[in-house]
Image (cartoon, rainbow, N blue to C red; front, side, top):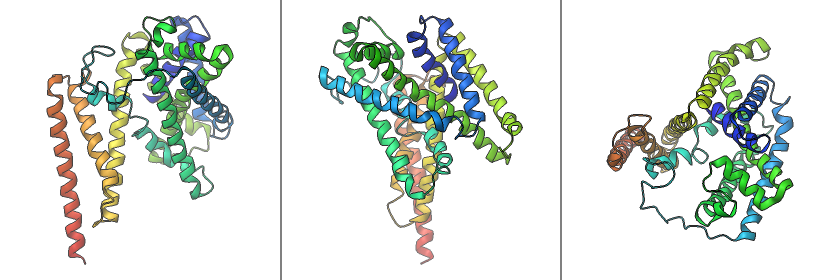
Length: 354
């Protein structure tokens, strides 16, 4: 699902700026991106990904810095963080969905991400020294967060301070927002570099997702990856699944939104599993300490988010939205009770062994 959504979203942007925006051009770019994914998945990381990622990184950083200077130049009026928090079912945007838990399924995939958790042990093997872990992983997440905040501010200007009218649009999808603002603020050359940065973000997520899937499956099944035949053995079923999802994405009018919601839910569910694993390890490592809260608090919160979303989202159980707060309260109490029970059990055992 990661590979599929990150084939289609950059294809929409490229189809708009390097084509006429029709479905034919979107399909052409989707095929080009998919072919790149296949090559990147099969080749060793230093043959293709390692060579072009510096270019993607430069484009991404240029885009962020350029947009930040655009914000300072425009100095738009941006809504406060707390504006609208009381409105849990907005009349604009995606109707019939509450801000909680939908917001934490769609936005939090960068801040609390099962996808990032699966990539970390793979990328750790590429480091020459363990001390490089903090600047590589912590630095990358901070940078990603800054880029996200910049675009959040830009989007707030666009939707809430007359940006749509200024760019000559009555309504716009996310790719159209990126293209319109980049062209309006940065001109032709600057907008091309900025859009390349925006396109680089999903593309670099898609290729590492599929490559990570191959390596994870190979490790689980104990299949060595030194021969191209072994790589194809695992990769072909993966890309067959991507092809089916991509066909559904393009052929179904609401296909992208459906896949995106399931991608977000599965991603956050995976994050819950990793957070639970971290929490259990901290409880056992420090049975009488408080360190388990580092993983325990976000684990309880994301467990609540995922199960509440599964209960009320229209593509899952589709139960009444009015029940959201009761589902949230119930799942929070259940997960917190499980955590407290396990902490007390381990703590009691540690005290008895003293």
